[in-house]
Amino acid sequence: MVLKNALLSIKKNIGKTILLFVLMALIANLVIAGLSIKEATVKSIAQIRESLGNEVTLSYNMQNIMKNREKGESMESVVQDISVSTADLLKDLDHVKNYNYTVTVGVNSSKIDPVEMKESTQNNAPQGGPQDSNNQVQESDFTVSGNTTMEYLTAFTNENYVLKKGRLLSTEDQKT
Image 1 (cartoon, rainbow, N blue to C red):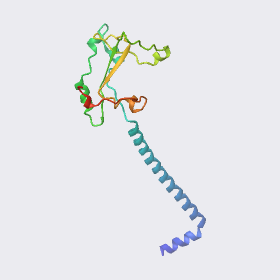
Image 2 (cartoon, rainbow, N blue to C red):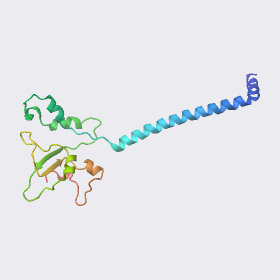
Image 3 (cartoon, rainbow, N blue to C red):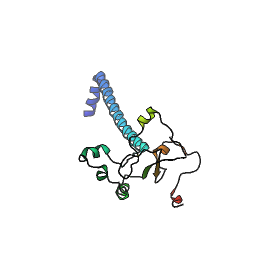
Image 4 (cartoon, rainbow, N blue to C red):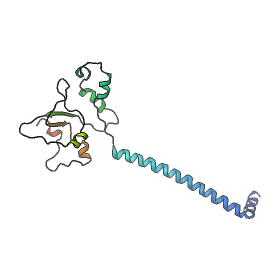
């Protein structure tokens, strides 16, 4: 009996019934579209994070050191070397996939002339440089960087640098 009355009501108010049906279909489509957009956004963010990766650099915050040191206190007494054991604590964390230790030194050569840099290029160069035993910035002709591996260097992974000849050093080359 209830079903019969419902069918009669639908027939009697056909315009209202069609309008309600269209409205319900529209709301259902909007909800489904919203859920699809949310799911696509979450997947897109995860894909971007995976493709970009993260790079963390452990170094001194020189501005903070300068601000917090006593007036007249030498930099040598404030700055301590970052030890390998301290860095090793970080490499063992769960989210660290790979690591690379880098050491930079300044060198001079009497046989090779350094390239003179233009004024505009020097403004973009990082400030500072290798330091001597008194933590004074050394003026040197060249900067040489030593790395644990070249495999993870951003310049190579982004293909800014391409090895034209030879090969990257590996663990097999150790002590050779």
